[in-house]
Length: 236
Image 1 (cartoon, rainbow, N blue to C red):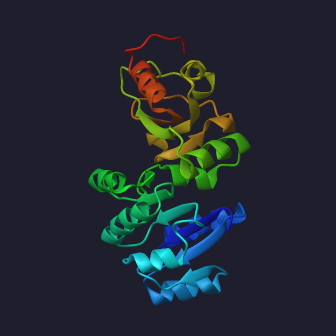
Image 2: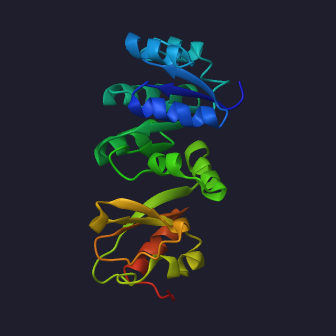
């Protein structure tokens, strides 16, 4: 099975991930320990199994070692997501595992357990942006982040009153290119945390409390964050 993905948990988030990836022609396998969710997944046209995945036999029966490219752990149980992440990593060192967490503590545990990426559905995260992207270049970048061992990451940079971007206009910012950073857009606190994509061409004025959303390598992100905070030289 080429481009095969297991989604563990046919939750609201899991169903949205499945829909997005099916549109991109991934082979989707749904696994859920709740029989009602499994039935719904089958009704929606997916191959689905009513498994807990809390034993290696079930993971092995899904060819986790050889035929699966990626695993999404997005079930309702944080403990199950952690256990399945750990088990799957032990069975397949090259598997891409994307797990969901609600807190930083949970994120750290999942990363230690072997998750490739950890998503927080309560924040502006990779998946939320991924579902709403329409530009091919950005879609490819987010694909790389989610489905490969890319060293690219998404970061949120808060604008404080001393930021070099405070009172600047979004579409006039060019300096991020000097840092090899892709600027996706901004969250505007005055608009109820509405996300404004840079590609929309809206000449948004950046204010204290806004949040820049950027993509780049860790070292570049760190340097760019320092620049935004005014500790690295550059030209806006």
